[in-house]
Structures are given as C-alpha cells and as structure tokens.
Image 1: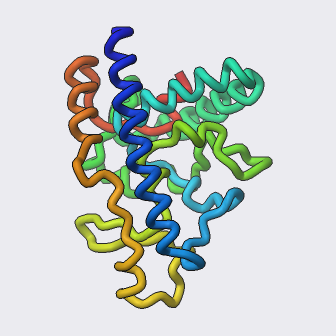
Image 2: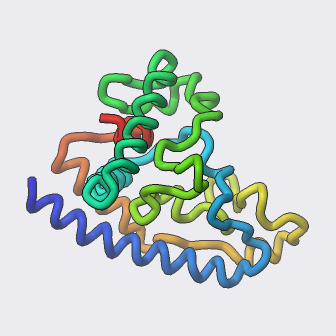
Length: 202
C-alpha cells in the first residue's frame, strides 16, 4: 500500500502541475475579468462532490498541516466533524462510508450553505490550498461542461461570449485524472465520490 501511495503521489504531483499551469494561462488571458483573490470565499460555501484522488490529496495535506501547525489542523478537523454532524441526517448516500448518491433527490439542495472545513473563517483563505480538489483548482476561468461554458458568477460581468470563450481553461486535455483515479479505485477498492468534510473529519 505504501508503494501505491508513492506512485499516486508522484503521478498526482504531475497532474497538479499540468492543471495549475493551465489555470495560470487562463488567468493571464482573463486579465481583469477574473476577480479571484485571497479572501473571496463564495466558491468555498456549499458542499460539492470530490473524487477519491481529491480525498487522498486532502488527507495528505491535513497530515502535512498537522506536522507544521497542529493547532490549525485540529481546527480543520473540528470544523469537518461539526459539518458532518449537521449534515448526517440528510446525507444523500451512505453516511457510514461517505459515499455520495448524486442521483438522490436530496443532493441538489444538500449543504448549500455549509462553508468548507478547510476554509479559515478568520483569514478567508484555504488551510489546505496546495492540496485542494481539482474543482477548486479550476474554478474561476470559463470551464466547459455538458451545459456549455460556465464561469464564476462574480467574474466576467459584462464580457461578451467571444471574450469569455477566449479565456477558456483546458485543465487536463489528456484526461490524466481519469486514468489515475481508475488506478486508485481499482487498487483501494473504494469507488465513487464523497465530500470534503467526510475525508477530513475521520
């Protein structure tokens, strides 16, 4: 298992570098349209799915924080546990394993007002920023999905469709994340999405 984690860590590091470089390029093209700054926390409110690769990365980040700043790590874990207590009754999935059922009708409104446990409420910054999920890494610039080209509602106000399209982020063109995720799920036997509070609260 230790060898698996070493392989995952190295491959994930390469993936993160690719995604972060893509974000930096999109941010450069976006210029003043992109308003993402430390202290802007709108995207840190509300529960969203994370995959098992994100969960491993976050746990690794919390372990690193426990070494360098145990008090801050303890507060992250405490916030995660309190979040789980608030959400457990209506958890759309298995509250024992943390596995989400995104087809559960409760999922659409689940935890929409919950701040991320990794968010430091005093500073408005992420305690696990270097280890954040892919959703967090690509949020802000225009990102293509099944519904079209989506952007943060605070950014690109007044921009034309052409200007928005010119700033599109293409974070993982080779789909390395899916390949690595499949490797992790096959090796660990743990499949499906979960939430940040679950992977940090236990």
